[in-house]
Image 1 (spheres, rainbow, N blue to C red):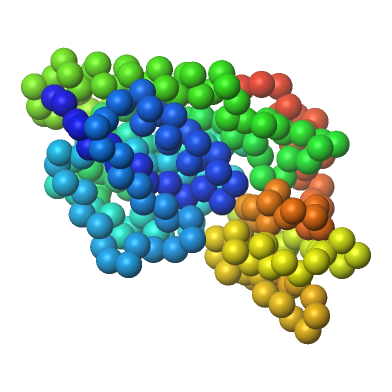
Image 2: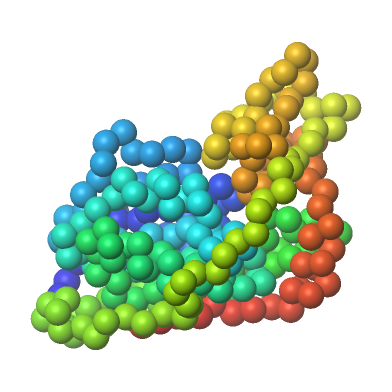
Length: 262
């Protein structure tokens, strides 16, 4: 099987999932690259993926599961026996049931998982003084993702049809891990540094930030703690203080490598 159309779908507030998806697509070497960025909202209309497209779906992991916002927006996509590569990106701790959850969700939507991967990206809570997978995906991750794409292409070239492929098995359990209740919390703004450029409003994937009075306000009830506003603020005026940063830095700083299922 040959696929000249490669379609990448990603939810990527801090760009790690997008970078990984693009690197895999580079290895697939399709003639036409389509993109659906669901970071900032749903597509204008439901998207049905054609059977001649090979789709990569890349999303981040929060607490061992696919982030809920991404799952909600992925419901806009469906297919009829179209090949897909589920990809999760996690912050160096563990992806637990997220990859299985994503693979199962895409199967229900009419896709056929042909390969899958769990990659590492800088943790949302990572800070300069307490780095957690800082600067990842890095060059080595990019090379591995591109090679992964080439291996997927070779696998599909050797098959006459999707029915010739064995059902893909990935790490994870069902029922999926039960996530504990989330504590409402959000980044705060250093008013001495903030210029009110409102860029944080633009990069927030859930519209949790607004100007209240003469200050930037993040609604803790809406914030998903992706920390895109912290990492993207041009004045370094945004911070997110949580004791989990120190715990993650202490226990999960050792480099982990991607896990691939081909």
